Image 1: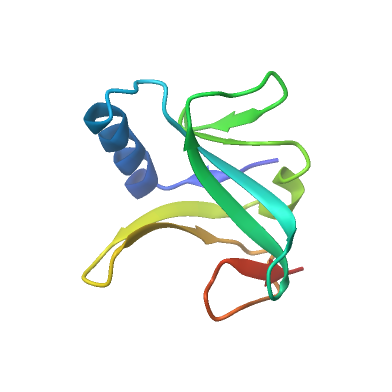
Image 2: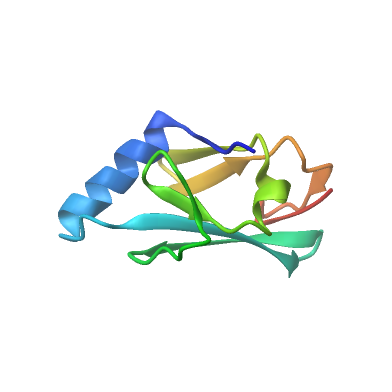
Length: 105
């Protein structure tokens, strides 16, 4: 199974590692039930990765339960006038909500 980490996300995580002086900083992505469309993404910065966590591009981690929902997804970082955020382009999402934080399969 694969999760694609775009260069924009890799660059941003490396910047955060430097500015926060946390060389082991990772972006953890978890998929949980909930949200207005059935499933929701939970993203957090962490320095801990468990032995069962799966690591991608040495900067993004997820668990084996979330990975099937993220199969083939691309993680990007967007920085524009409105704000900046990590975004997930997920080909498995049949539909999503207006806020972009939840989806259905």
